[in-house]
Image (cartoon, rainbow, N blue to C red; front, side, top):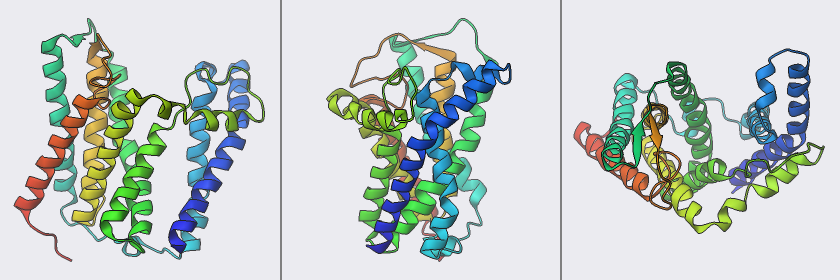
Length: 293
């Protein structure tokens, strides 16, 4: 319970920092843009800076948090060295990405999506970069640190569910666009309050939160069964790349919540696709057998 209380303290400190720092980041960025330095920053709304401030807070408080918990390495979090990390990374990418890509092909055939007349290769490069960077950061935090802390004082099944809940809530909480039109010192707290607005819409909860929760369960399950982050990183990268790349080459014709949302990871249909990935993952892990301790 002490670890859980400390984890709650870490989240609280991160959120408070993000709420306070977000206006400062917004004003600094728009000030630079006004001076002709990085003018592209001017197009970002306040909510984007609020999310970056939260990430900055999470990174700033990470080292003191680790010292507080007396965590010195991966073994303290239940992680072991993975001699077959490359295979796990590749299999994870394929198990996650191929079903999503197949789903996209079916939706194209049904007319839910149409191919774009031209492909923005720079946008595809951005997706590839995100799929290469984001999984390492998020898996280190959510499945490496947070799940590892929960495993120190809880049963694996409970730790798995709680970590999936943390993952889905963090990704689901988002204030609606244009929540903040005039930035003030309290704007960060205003965005934080409106981040819960989506829970008032049952369709969004079913379409978005449920899929995120299932993805969190799958990633945590992969981490528990391999005692390594490489398989979750591969899975995470596969989902980001397949969904992001498809959205760059195809145009969504309809949004039919709760069945289909704004991308291939939102909706009941993507929920089923993710479940297929979980089944394939379990079959493969059973085929390769248990990992050495």
